[in-house]
Amino acid sequence: MSFNYIYQGETHTDTTAEFMVALGMNEDQILSVLQQQKFESSQVTVKRLAAYISESDPMYAEWQYELASGNPSEDEFKAKWLAKVNEIKLRHPITAA
Image (cartoon, rainbow, N blue to C red; front, side, top):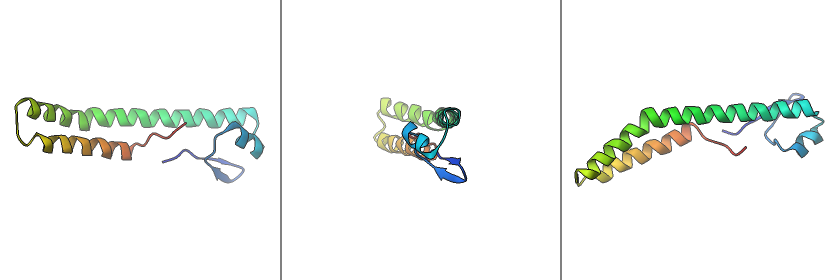
């Protein structure tokens, strides 16, 4: 999911100063857009971290236990953990600022 903002009734995704100045935005408007982008990005990071802690970290610990105990099926536990990590990354994508 990419960040977007509305200016004069049109949706934009380019947050470079040059682009926003070319649109006719003033300093306060540009600053507001950049602050909103930063806030939304931080919220995604918080949500992703919470998902790691509650969903994938327990699976990682389980995989590590199976690995240490010599379980020949430890690769299955690793695959489940990695799949969960990828699912979380897709659910909470971090976009470039």
